[in-house]
Image 1 (spheres, helix red, strand yellow):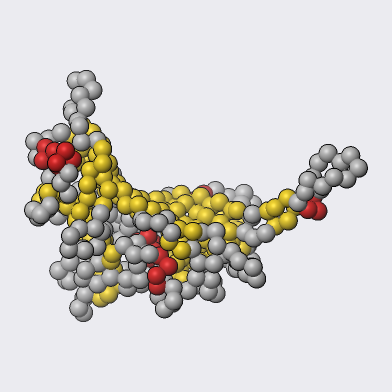
Image 2 (cartoon, rainbow, N blue to C red):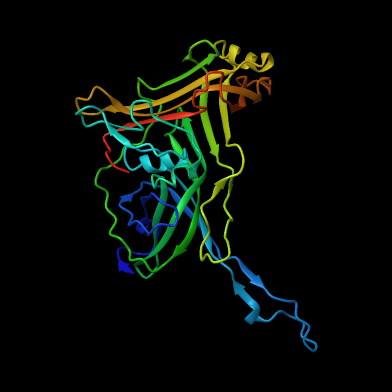
Length: 353
């Protein structure tokens, strides 16, 4: 424990590092995140022996309460920033995409020019190129000390990204860790660059929709878009002879959810009616920020889904005198040309995970 600040959330921190191989030696966290909340859950997996019949005893015996193994989870929320985001986004997509320099400029693109696509999180483990997460959370005591909680080999099982016209672009992620320990020393958290949150208020930010096969075009009326990526994974694989869990494995299709909060504008009418006609839609949300030096590029965070189908909410309800509006729920699917079912781009001046 190291003296940092008085014991409140103001003294906390979350730092991460890329873990390229599940179960590998703890990678000392080097990137301190901008975050809002971090909620850990420890799961020690005990087993109680018995019930034993012992001459009138009417309760379990403590000596038969046996710890089998321990793992942990963390739910992290924050705003999508221009720094320290690449690892979280790549991990959410199960991608091994690297930050690639744009020519000789100071702009870097996650996954290169084409961005990253959705993949199975375990698919890069054999080549030690995974974007699993080792994490240290600094939790303040009221004694003005900070305790280090060290989370090993985390896999993002669920991620939510929100593009809101009157709010900042935000995220919420659920991470399943192999285990947690408290012996690794506390790091000295640093912020090398003050990050700037992405928002949809900048002039070149865009929200575009098109009825397939038409190209996507700007659409008036949508207030908020929420994208959810949920990897269905077996996270409880532990075998005889092992101290900790084995790598989680995908055991179901990824649930790619989308919701759109929209007014019933004339422009949005075709989108609503696509539900009844079973027509696919292409959607793009692009949040941009300041220019990156003389690179000719701006800070950018974007999502593209080329083939979504509305599942519900297309019938705009009339709920009194207020503006007619609704929330559309949709699902992303693979199109006829096998484009990535969902892809993302991150362009910043940040050069490392």
